[in-house]
Image (cartoon, rainbow, N blue to C red; front, side, top):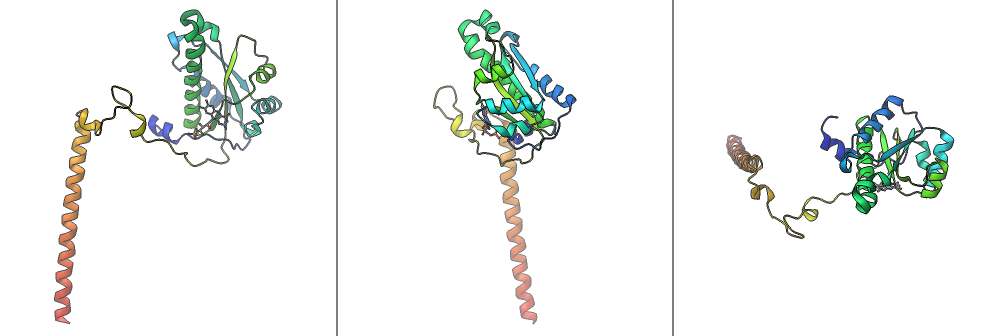
Length: 226
Ligand SMILES: Cc1cc2nc3c(=O)[nH]c(=O)nc-3n(C[C@H](O)[C@H](O)[C@H](O)COP(=O)(O)O)c2cc1C
């Protein structure tokens, strides 16, 4: 797979794993994708805890409100935030908002890299934070943000419905829509393609009706001959 949009569109949340081992080179590549995520002022205020040990995976799954399916993933990556690091530069906004966004960007990079490697993944946000911190000996000032479960998918669910662009995109101000953005933006490539498509449709339709008529005439001649 090469095209990033195709990767984004075809990634699915996988909750059913076959328990197969994930190679370290694959895990390292996924972690690498995480560390290349954008972060406020490039503070990179995250740490990634890799959980491969089955007994610890089981405990983590239990802390995730008994989402035991994730214990069958080859690896669980716990993305931990260092909020103080962002607070130093950006105050409360850095601590509360940027930190969450930084870790979310790392998480999404990891999901996409896992998918590009042919692996299934799941973003787990529901867990008992205190329990998880205790299991993984995470210090007080660090906040686990998400658990990224990665493994070989046993089942790939159908794509859940996603909103089309129209209801979620506004232009210039809240609730303001533009009927034909391609026309508004003078997107010549799109406008020319539309003209070509409509001309092609017209030519095809006309050609088909000529063929139908010719067939009709030929059949009537044939009947006369019979
Ligand atoms: C912040 C966040 C938290 C999530 N927490 C969980 C979770 O605890 N358990 C789970 O099964 N899926 C979790 N998910 C995955 C979503 O359920 C999933 O992304 C959504 O159903 C859309 O499916 P898709 O990822 O295949 O497009 C979470 C996703 C996000 C972004």
